Image (cartoon, rainbow, N blue to C red; front, side):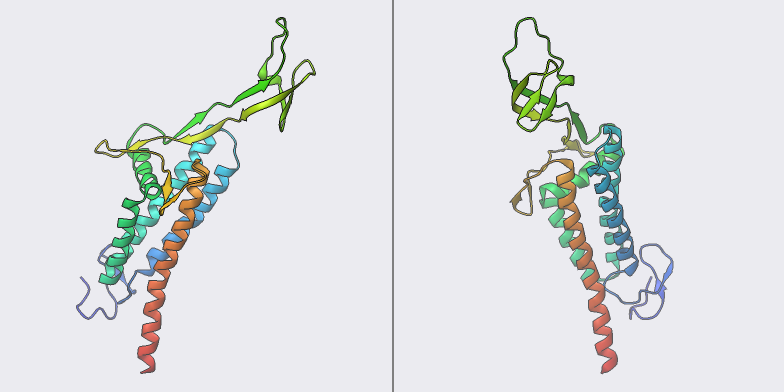
Length: 233
């Protein structure tokens, strides 16, 4: 264990290895790992936005969930070096448990890891057209060309588009090990979610995790400022 003064090289309380983070409020290695996972999140979101097959989408979603939870894991371990950082991370954990979006994603990662179901579901597209169709005309919608509010039928006629929803992916309820269910989020930080798609939810989480990493950085920066002030004295 680290000596009571907290000075000099000590034994890391998390890994049992010697470390040189001294008496800092947060182990800097945790911040570096969090930054790495933020890069993973950014890459996963770009892959989610790229479209492609449902299989590719679910792979990117899993990568996003893994990086998301890994940030919590890294900062939790890094916060064990001081009462100040433990208190900070405790507040972040409480905020996660109380927030629909943050808690859903956290449990979705656990469900993906320990369960057999995916946290996403592919929904087929559908279209509603306003057309006059002779009894003898058969329409194969796969051959209909949509252009905004109009659609060109296979026989060349034009029709008005009442509704056109392309194929898309939605979030579905997940469960924890105690079989408690967590439904897809509708709110985040006290505000209604306007885009509840997996991509929309991932972008909101990305913004939150960037701010969380910034707060962790400020803990370390505060230590550095305090150390500089002490030297000046």
